[in-house]
Amino acid sequence: MNPRPKLRSPPPSTINSPPPPPPRINDNKMPRKLPTLTLATTLFTILALYAFFNTFIFSNPPNNATTVSFSRNSNPRNSFDNSVRVYMYDLPRKFTYGVIESYTLARGGEKKTDDSLLKYPGNQHSAEWYLFDDLNKPDSERVGSAVVRVMDPEEADFFYVPFFSSLSLVVNPIRSGNNVVANVDKPVYSDEETQESLIEWLEQQENWKRNNGWDHVFICQDPNALYNVVDKVKNGVLLVSDFGRLARNQASLVKDVILPYSHRINSYTGDIGVEHRNSLLFFMGNRYRKEGGKIRDLLFQLLEKEEDVIIKHGAQSRESRREARKGMHTSKFCLHPAGDTPSACRLFDAIVSLCVPVIISDYIELPFEDVVDYRKIAIFVDSNTAVKPGFLVKKLRKISMERILEFQREMKKVKHYYEYADPNGAVKEIWRQVSSKLPLVKLMINRDKRLVKRELTEPDCSCLCSNQSGILTTL
Image (cartoon, rainbow, N blue to C red; front, top):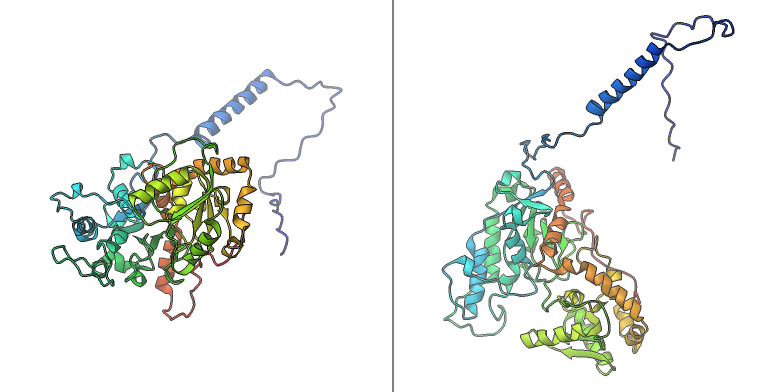
């Protein structure tokens, strides 16, 4: 590489050159004396120059000065100049409140006459409700958010599609495909038909057709949400909890956002400390899982007879959540093995419990990694090492009390990122993550319009694959 060239000084000018100095007068014959008038003139000149530069050159603009900037349509923008503008579609009711109603009716609930009386059921995928609710709040309750809702689609940077896709997946107590006789007295709901209906509605929207969906945002937190139509929405920004069921050409860290699951047990409200954490390691969950979750059974076999280790098989229920809360609040470490997909709400239950997560999930992706250094709040062990007899417990016992307290201090600093009800918590951070995708979205929109369409056997340069390798352990 050539060295950076030095800046050249401009050549001396020959225009308007000053006249040659007069002949030197012999100072011995005529003593030099500066007149008082000249000194006063010089002082006045300096003060005048100071006043000029201070007033016109370096002064701050007045508080009421107007800065004009322009939107994509060259119209003056409103007062939210620094916020990314989101237009939330006013979807037909069946995609929002209609899903909640169908869920309630399928469980013997009563039909409500007012949508405000419908309550979104608490579950680990409730981010879709919190984001929808947030954009429906007045601006005065959304101070500090990275995005502002606009009512004119022509002003929008992003288009949010608030379909409750995860709840739609579980409206029927027994999902379709199982050999269960349906109760004819209860309404029949089809998630597949609802997904297809959403796409039909979107394809009629000019905003969808204009940029091929690149500037649209979809939430599909359950790994199976939108599974029937994901290929039709894959250009958009997908809000997901992991990439476990998504192909490489459907999702990536570059264009999508990883969300935390909603924790299912109450947060620990005490201070850091190990005095009341008598158990070394705790886990409660389904012992038998598919795919990467097969490691759970191996861990059960290794750990269930270890002293001061609590490892239990349990399904989702209120009683199970009470046991899990007690176990996590009284244990130093909480085990997080992979399930059917790499991530689960148990990880976030542990963080808000100040129970140090021990993550055994080789392909996990984690939310908000640009602001959270997970090595400071969790321990990572690769699957092959974790199932070596005696390895895990031996390593955990060697960790000092002071090191555990350091983990807890860091968890306490970042736990608000996993609280959806916190005004400065998960919702605000998700919108910040979405806003950061805007330069890429604009790039892809422009790139898409000039590319020659072709079929690719491998993902192109717009794809960044998720975690395929990593360190063996942080112990």
